[in-house]
Length: 139
Image: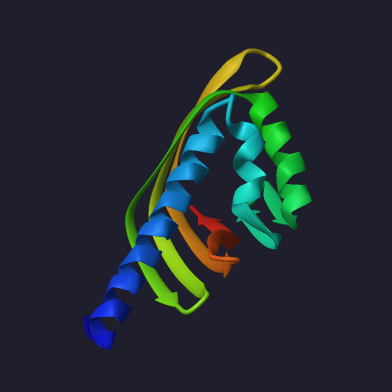
């Protein structure tokens, strides 16, 4: 193979790895039995920005907020579609269309929630594994 072809294949493999990372984000968000793995998808110093309710810095803050999310939401389904991913070495950026369907406990019963928007994301490759370094949820 030529160096150009090898580089193109590597770029496509990295994009697929980032798509898998996002698929795990959705799966872990929605599956109570896997939710404990959610924070591990993030770099240690990651930022998760979901205005107006959350601005979280660091994996432990994300883990703690995730536990609050899980206890309040009785059901959720995260959908991320139409990825646009650009890879530059061990860093990458991405944008996804997003749809969230959930029910949450208001204290007076369960309420449905539908939310749509966009994820704007940054990724970092650490020891060969892609992690989220920043997620901005834009409504």
